[in-house]
Length: 149
Image (cartoon, rainbow, N blue to C red; front, side, top):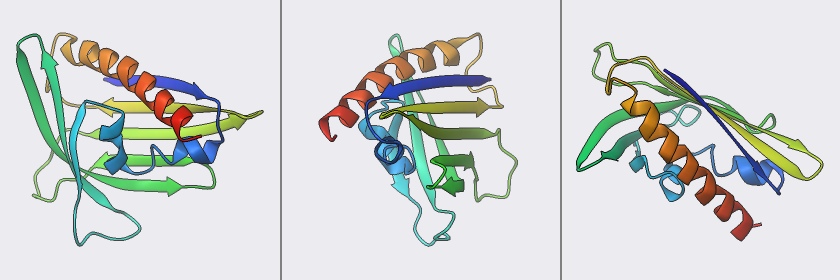
């Protein structure tokens, strides 16, 4: 599954990128990321986070725990990539989150791409949940960017 989303914001690329280059900030604007905690003792240039994804589907709640690692970080190009990197030696379904910010005439555009290669939820459930989360997260992130501008 691949999901793409964008957000236009009236700010600099640096300002918008500051909200997406650290996974610990995502819960402030994206409810799907219920809990994010830095992994202690990891490499400074490739930090990792323990992430709990949680979504409500009607009366049920589903959750998934992942260890995500920042595998690419280019602040000058406003680009970051996070990938699933479990430390248990087993093979796991890939999760890859890419974020890139472009600036044009005082407005910045965030481009996000999520790739999931597993079968956590089937029958389009994950796509519907993500669609709602993206809509709400986009609004909350835009509000945060405007409030701190």
